[in-house]
Image (cartoon, rainbow, N blue to C red; front, top):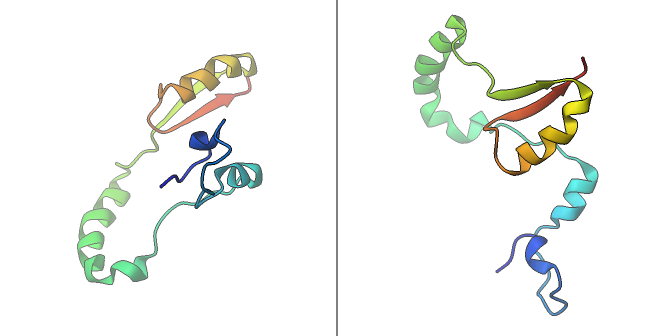
Length: 93
């Protein structure tokens, strides 16, 4: 069973994909998070753990940043090779 479009390259007799990643990339959707209502049984445990951390400022976004638009050429292959664990930003200088 194939889920992506990479496996479809140069395979004309391949079965249709279950999810069209090319269409998703074209539309640039952004999906994140989860629905709390699906985890009500763990809500108190989440509050006991998360609220003190949020108040302390401990959680920080995992991101890599490069300064200067000219570094975009450096950032793209870095992202493709997994040179970052969170998002990678290129900031205009």
